[in-house]
Length: 195
Image 1 (tube, rainbow, N blue to C red):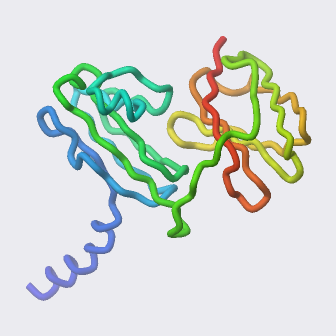
Image 2 (image 1 turned 180 degrees about the horizontal axis):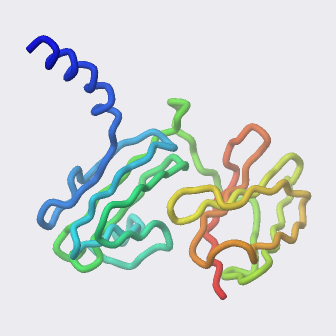
């Protein structure tokens, strides 16, 4: 019996750090999950459900219009979100019934990171092969593209008026981040790659 309790106590730290979201009937469980940036979240989505990222306004209205972020069908998936903020999601066929949830991603420094007003432009958007990025403050700045699953797909230093090939990236929706040399996000834009 002592061995059982010792094994249970040793497993507790792993259980506390395990992060997952599942479906239970017509609800997500938990409906609100708070994680640190970069934490892997296991998603267990029932067969008839989806877990589709939407805007806050769509979420508040029990709508189901995808915002270009993550989008998962039924099954087991892993989602890792690297950007602090609140991510809103719904089950597309059951959003009008209130099947929705939120993921709150906290900065791994313990300090909330504000996303300032964008200080750069990227075009064309959507694009198929090349992206033009202009910024007034390019000194020691980089552009980082994050895919819909929260993974870094591209990172490149900027000079002020840059042309970047994206022909090697998969089609889909990305978040483009303008980052300074210390890793602080100075701007954020959505980007679609189509072919």
